[in-house]
Image (cartoon, rainbow, N blue to C red; front, side, top):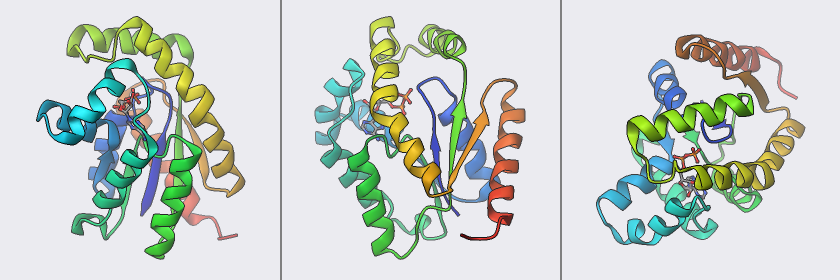
Length: 194
Ligand code: ADP
């Protein structure tokens, strides 16, 4: 199964991606995590990505697309994958279409986590306190939310048009949210094609 997990910063994508990957037996591929690991290891990619991450800006599409294209070629991605935090721009959506078309395997489902704005801010502020991520400061959080609304929200409409989108309530207990997502995915795959 090939799944996209979308939603604003703080919606719980990373947490749910890990749980879903285990439940579905596919790798969870998080562009944000890959960037952070590269920043940590001070690789050339990390050195390039760092200033974007710290400013809460999107890493340029050509860099992100190249990274995902390469990652999807690993053998563990043959059976399927779950992408967390990609695509985030229309150019990335096009690039992903291209990658999946050349592999003859399109996206099966897109899950958008829906969480009200106040709860998002509360979760990110709490994460700032407990995990100390460099991009969880107030100004940067605000900028990441803005980018999501302006650049990433339009992708939801595009996937809705393809009848791939399920919007899932991301509020409440972690296990409950996972269950809601798995329910949404099974009703999606039970639905006749077209
Ligand atoms: P969040 O969803 O809370 O922003 P992530 O860990 O998914 O957290 O992403 C952290 C940062 O990594 C983003 O603010 C951005 O700088 C970079 N990033 C992640 N995914 C992408 C992407 N698809 N395109 C561009 N930049 C990305």
